[in-house]
Length: 359
Ligand code: SF4
Image 1 (cartoon, helix red, strand yellow):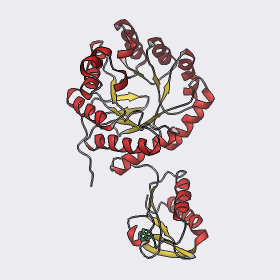
Image 2 (cartoon, rainbow, N blue to C red):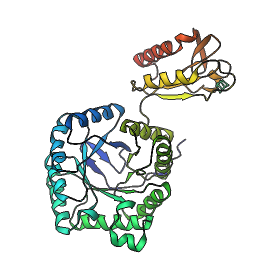
Image 3 (cartoon, protein in one colour):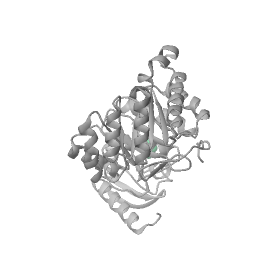
Image 4 (cartoon, rainbow, N blue to C red):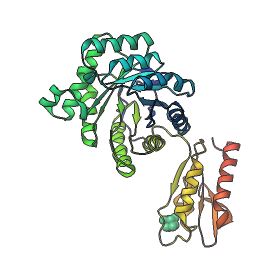
């Protein structure tokens, strides 16, 4: 049963070969935290992100060297790349020329109309979309003085900036409305939804370290997706961006929107558990990251309740006293010595994947 309301209907844009909006699947993106000028480090990070399922990557473009690096980076990656520009419109022009698949700008901080027009003309020439990135922390002064950093102010900024681009007959747009707290972020998207058909890039910005970041992102992004709002997402964490991608997919999986790779379920343990389940779960979780098939794996603390509690899992193990068991769909397959549990589970999983017993 899906918890998700009907998806908001939007226009569709393409960032490279990734479609965004309308009925296209909700894509997962991230942003590098390397110096973009350092092509080797940036490419290595993007390749790790691609492996984790990242579908679009954004890079910061703080200077001309970074803009020009896009050309070399693009030659070594397969996912589309978005150039993130603040203030200097010339960096947008250089990034588009270097092959960026989209530009992220905030027209409010690009300045004069003729500079915005130059960016729009360039995007038209290269056939690439523009993301209007409204951020509660960098609103137009006049809007902020009047409305503060409220959701209403964010929406007014978005509407104004969408109009600026559309008045230049440019419609290849997506928009993000980001604040560092869930309530303003969610309110802003809800307020904007009935006012435009531009696709939404969603996320909670500067969400924080691992716990705060994952929690805020799961609630903020989750609330929006559950209401059918959101066409592409980025989880923002003060961590390796690979963690952002993983979290993004877990949010989509939890809502039943998309799933990628194996799903691990494990019990919290209780007084019946006689093995080091935390360690086993960690080992299996790490090993599953290398596998891309959709399989549900259970790691349970005791043989008495484990298989029954994890009936819906395709395969699982449950710990005992000295010996554990391997089970499939809640049925016990065989007993295994405890220190063999992980290896035998992984080899069974690989057999299942190979034989495509279910997939
Ligand atoms: Fe406790 Fe066993 Fe349930 Fe784990 S599976 S929570 S160890 S009863």
